Image 1 (cartoon, rainbow, N blue to C red):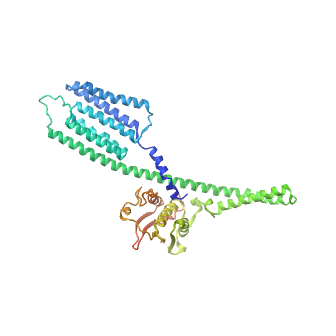
Image 2: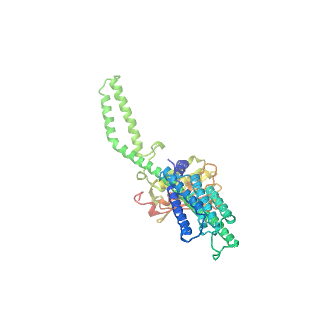
Image 3: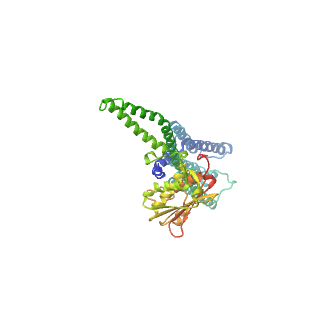
Amino acid sequence: MALAELLHDSRENEEILSASSGVRLQSLVYIRWLAVLGQAFALILVQWIMGYDLPIIPAGLLVAASALVNVLVTLSYKSTARLSNKGAVLYLFYDALQLTGLLYLTGGLSNPFALLFLVPVTISATHLSGIGTIFLGLTTLSCISFLAVFNQPLPLPESEIHLSKTYILAIWSALVLGTIFLSGYAWRISSDGRRMTNALSVARMALAREQQLSAVGGIAAAAAHELGTPLNTILLISEELSGDFPEGSDHAEDTKLLHDQALKCAEVLAQLSQGPTDDRFSQKDAHHNYLPLNSLMALIADKYSDKGAEIDIVTEGELSNQPKLFATPEILHGLGNLVSNAAEFANTRVTISIRWDDKNVLVVIEDDGPGFSEEILARLGEPYTSSRSGRGGMGLGVFISEMLINHSGGNIIFGNAKRAGARVIVEWPRKQLEKADPYL
């Protein structure tokens, strides 16, 4: 299976990844229990220990409501349940409203616990979608603005410090700016992390499928070798039996049919064990493909020759001294996808230049197409970067190629040729490329 075919399934891979995304419900339950305990402790401390007269009944009902919701959620869902994006936003939306109610009863923004408004929006920015974060951010800003104007003052004695309107405005400004900055910063960092994690997971899925195919190819070759001897015995005996029966008899026809079918099986096994003659019996196992670099590039070029562009291979070096390497899935599909992209964007021609010396091996892939734009060139190698937006491009091809080449010990440099078109330079230390075992 070609890397392009694997990328065709990347949407399915992303659906698999998204199925395990979201926020773990039990984590939110634990956070809310901490909030309930903290709120209850603060009310008890201020009302009965410090002696201030709070509206304890409505405040206590708000705390009890959160505890009741937590109990109902715990009884209704498994501990391993994960909330969808919408469900998590509603869950955090309730927390913001409940905190607003408590602060309204206990001094508004003059209450030091107004800082807790940053918790729901930060959780959303870290784990949820941008739309959900914007919704919770606007909710938080609305609640903060409401509390700056409407609230029941704390029952402080005359001798205690009372905050001026200017200071309340300063607190409002700090909370608004803190909400915007903290949620934006957390969302940006977590978004980059999620994109990279998802892209790496898709790449690992693609490589795992290729390695499974390689294993199947090795098993097929081993089976062909083991079945060769008994099949030759069947051919020999069936040929001898055909001479023992009269011409035209039923037994003679059955014996001839047996010999013909065995002969077809022998031809199939020969294709499996000696090398491919078509795509049906393509040998995938790297241990059976120890090739000169020029031959490996010729195989890759032939595979993508139907893209519409002519692919030329230019060898710069002594053929007798050219490197030999195992055709591992990483190298085959890492280079193959780069050649495929070049052929797709080329006007008429793709040139693959191969260079080597005693220390390094270079493969330079150039096309006569439009080349990389400055915007794309600056971001190449990042996941979900594509110049084919809306035309089937997922933006993972170059990312996966770079990951596969790096895994094989190589390095990729993207740029544009001086004349025209894109240029991709792939470089390996020769010692790394010619290592004895392809899987070390």
